[in-house]
Image (cartoon, rainbow, N blue to C red):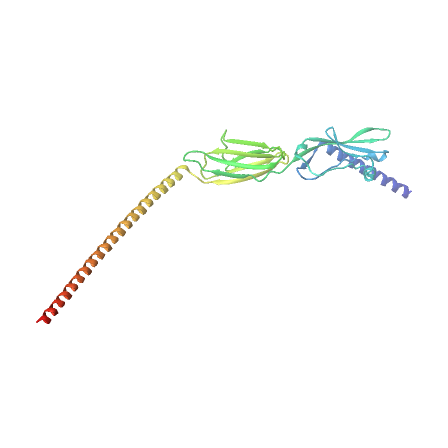
Amino acid sequence: MRGPLWRIQLLFSFFFFFFFFFFTICNTLDGECVLGIVGQPLRLSCFYPDALALADVSAEWRRNEDEVARDDGDDDDALRTGNFTLRLPAVDAREDNASYSVIVSSRGNASVEACRLCLRVTAPFSPPELTWEPAAADAPSVFQCDTGGGFPEPVVSWLIDEGVREVPEGSVETLVELRPDSHLYYVTSYLTVNVTDTNVSCVVRNTATNLSLASTTHAVWHGPVVTRATDALWVFSTALCVVVGAMVAVGLAYQIHLDRVSKMKKQVLSRRNRGYRRRQHTEETEAVMFESCESNV
């Protein structure tokens, strides 16, 4: 009695396992959507144990109403296990919310829909790049937040001092672009607000995965202080230019004075030299005349 009872228990466990596995998988696929990442491979699983009892089984995968793959019974593994799995080499953003179904057919039996599931698509966004430039005195600053390469369209929000200070109404402008080549979203958001020693954050949330990326900058700026610093710098620059100009003018005047003194010295020396040569010539002439007179005597 132990042999037949053991076989019955094993057979019951086998059917219970298949029933539980089939019930769990089919309800999961029918009740929830499969999440695929753009550019990554994906396995769409469908388990249909009733196919084990059918002859000449064929399975057809459909996306919406279009056939994407077909198995005419050449896959023995699918016939032995009832596992009809579709492998997508890469998920495309255009397949978001697509409906995939498996139609199983056999000889002498009507075609049945073994499984149905929907495909949700996502792609992670790049970390937001937050930049800002201070404006003129008493004018608001403009903060710019850029992110892209993600799917679906994100939710962009701004925080001032980690949410302690409310973002003024009408101060945010967000531009969303869906690139036709990649079907991915690129977002630029602007925040225009007056700040002084404030933390400003840009938060980008992916609605498919509910994951958020944030970037924070510490804006330390005050209009009047910047104005006074600018005025002081302008005064210092002007004074420096005046001092340098005066030094250059004094240097030129002094150089001209030196040139004049040098020229006058040269003129005096030249005159002295000419007078000395004249006296020397006169003395020599007188000496010659004196010697001539003595000779005559």
